[in-house]
Length: 73
Length: 285
Image (cartoon, rainbow over all chains, first blue to last red; front, side, top):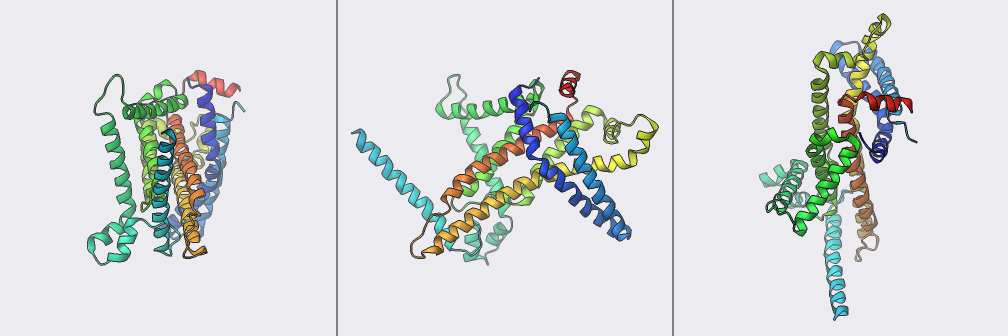
């Protein structure tokens, strides 16, 4: 399979993406929630729910990244 | 004799550098926007009422991205036209580029990644060339427009989702997205897990696009601000203050192109079902 060098490159790439993985899902959740709220006329509900889900998604992805690529250091 | 030649080379280099810096400084002086203007912006400022120029101005990112794509196509077409066993210098260089990219991607993906080399290699070369366009006087880096970067990211997203559906099947993929539930409790968690997983998937192209866009526009503005600063500091004398940042831009552009390609490779890797041996090797560490 892939080499040790390839493993390090993979780690470099996925670690560089961690700040975005944590920051973007809640913001995206906020936008999608706001749009859905406007459609369904239930203004703050889905916004908050999706922001929360965004936070969970970010941390879940972080956990997955560390679990899968966190070996070798 | 040798000394004469060196003197000539130094003279020529100096002359070229002067032309290069001078054109950039002129460009910086011609506009108050803290971004080095390209030739379309300058044309628009002068002949804004001509329809085709305002059309070009409106679509300038697209124009420059098509220009970069055509340039790359031409370079590779002429490089590989006369395929010889003992390559010429140009062909040799192109072969070196392609081979190093292939080794790089195969390092990460393993031997079955060979079929993704054309896609990912093209991404790398295209993004790198687009980022480096900011260093060419009167040109613009098309990747400083979010539309261009999100389009590239959507290509990667579509490829990864296609692979997901191909490898797991449509319902298998949905099952996977729901967190592969088995017991009653896990099935009860599906309404929570599914939106989270969908959000994670949608986030990926956004992170790719935003990082590239943010970095490239940041470095464009940095170069623009310092070019302007150098131009107004001692007004009749023009100082090329942006030069150190251009070297920095060389480096960060390469880095961003590399990171974009690497992350696309990782997203594709996540869409390929892994052999059991590697999963267990990763888990055991």
